[in-house]
Amino acid sequence: MPASFAEFCGIHDDAREAAAQHTARLIEASGLELVRFGWCDLHGVLRGKTLTAKAAVKALRAGVGMVSTLLLKDTSDRTAFKVFEPGGAADLPGFEFASNLILLPDPASFTTLPWAQGTGWLRCQPWFQDGTPVPLDTRRVLQQALAQLTQQGLGMVCGLEVEFHIYRLKDAWHGPDLDPELSAWPGLPPAVSLIHPGYNLLAEGWFDMAEEPLRIVQHTAQALGLPLQSLEIELGPSQVEAVFDATDALTAADNMVLFRNAVRQALRRAGYHASFMCRPPFPNIMSSGWHLHQSLVDMSTSQNAFMRETPAPGSAPTDAGHTLSDAGAAWLAGLLAHAQGMTALCTPTVNGFGRFRPNALAPQAVLWGRDNRGAMLRVVGGAGDGATRIENRIGEPAANPYLYMAAQVHAGLDGLARSLTPPRATEAPYAPEAERIPTTLPEALDALRADTALVAGFGEDFVRYFSRVKQSEAQRHAQSDDQADFERREYFSRF
Image (cartoon, rainbow, N blue to C red; front, side, top):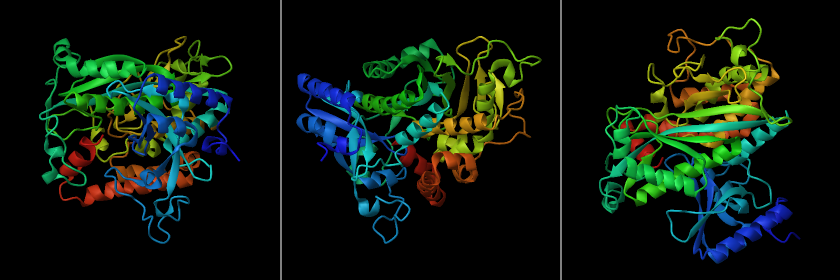
């Protein structure tokens, strides 16, 4: 018999045991009282359990139980499948009757939380009790996509540019969201005020005005070992941006999950509210985007597989081959071919579709451009430039990072497999005749289900599951008496 559940799952080798022993020593030596076992849900939010230090050491190998319906929640925390009715979970074996899953931590992910005294943290993934992995786990979805990329001798590198909003809580501990007389499902959002008035892009004076919360963001990110590069004042009132150095794709996704959840918690304790909602529920705001920079690395040479030494013979600057290698051009073409299908994975909330409007530094159509911030895909770099990359500007900051990046992989791999050729770069990103990005979440879900390559990449079961959960959200929004209030409660409070 296996000595632990991790061994039963077949993942506990010598390296994992060494990491478990090292983490156990850290927990004991640092005098921690609590350790959070965190797992990223479908919506990119960390959930999990908090164990005492002694119990946490044991759970490094044994794991900890978790109710399976946490994978089936929509953005209001309602379960989108009727797991207690006969056949209600027929498409989801292992989830019947809110059965138990086991969260197994990665011992090497251990860190201490800089804002929570005496508290450690571990990243976890769910397993069925029979020792098989849970295929609906979004981190596993990205791992499987990257494994397909590895089979081609390629790795993916991603850099993050994340816009979001920070507000000052008007009453940090006794606002309307914490009034028991006003509690609801979901509850009221907090009452807030601005940290800067906006409409003065990159203004040093506005940065100085907002320095206190931005320092909290900086110190929190750096204490967690995240590769923060810069913090900037964006155009909208109370809007800021965080930029991170490039890492491998899985690390970048892990970093995004940890960053969002960490800064929200650290800022809340200091009397601020951070929101990664695309369009907060106030007049005169600017939409927030998440711009995902991506390139491939040739694993045999460690070189940027998107870079070409010299422009393709006879090419013009508007030709992809002028800047990108043949592989980079095919990847670009794959992203364009599957742009409509990937939209729901990159912009997964009803609110996020309000961002796709002309002349707003946001995309509206399925186009690419050479260093063009109005296009959906912005190609950056040039021949001989080792930093040559593609920036996808379709995402919103509330997106699940694992699904956002997996969508790039499956689309790009199809472009490589079929040696697709992209059209010429646009010089008119808001031209009315261009193919449009889906304008609503239901439209985007239809496009995803109709995209045979993405369905094959993610798997029919996952696409069906994802669509069911997101349809629940879209239907409730459509049926709500006050759609603005729906978005205030469902997104601004929680994301």
